[in-house]
Image (cartoon, rainbow, N blue to C red; front, side):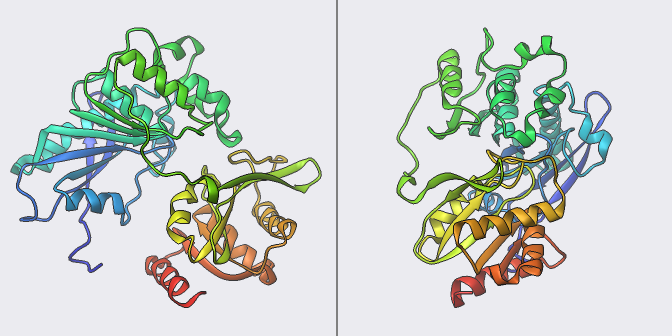
Length: 376
């Protein structure tokens, strides 16, 4: 993609209704590509204390190419703006993030859309997981949005506490605040009403944000359930748990495939299941094996999160399964582990593909191209 084709982000520093600062990024179709004013897709990131990274995003490209603007909101609670900003969401999850998204829409209209390029009467809010919770709260507590789309949305944060990965098990306590407020934050509370159409996607096997809670929400708000979309990955997906030390093990997915083995290492707060999508696309070339790293997903943790311990786990995992040398794909935290695994255990690694680590953004694209074209 040439520089002229890449989207140009416009970063907003917003004064919220309570006087606080909120940050957001707007992407607009290039002039002349779509008739103005264009509808807007607002996105609430997952986490909920993650952020919306400034990088090339195929979802943004898709919507821009179909005549939408995209508004990514780093509501208060997002990482990347200092500790005070991240901690501002504590005790106010489901309230402050929603008001910040609404304020970001209005600010985008005043600052970016003052030339008439944005249609604020046609704004959709979208989110996945914790971002889906924000989107559902916005759809049931405000009238700003014409529709909402969510994937694997959290519906009842208090119940999510018991199903969340161990690494996040006490996260919700800080975000929800006093126990006597938890009932008010649930989308299953009596009287919840949807003020706009909602499109929800959810996997039947999801154990972290269970499908039955979404069904309860749908029944309560009198929305319509339509099933049968998506595709079945059953034959290529095998979930297992393997012991790598006494009384400790890693959960992992063997995502199948016909080619060389690729060890896929997720980033911080992630899990092996994030590689389901690329596994479907790459199964002709590779067989992806994706563990939940220590303390993430369903994997155990013996109390430490040092670099040596992450690298030791990866090496022990490969040896326990009799794999190696393998191609290692590492994202963010997993990329650091991949580098160090290759340095300390070169006999286990045949090639590296690193995403979101280092200062060479072109390196990832070239590595993937070389791997797919030349067989790594």
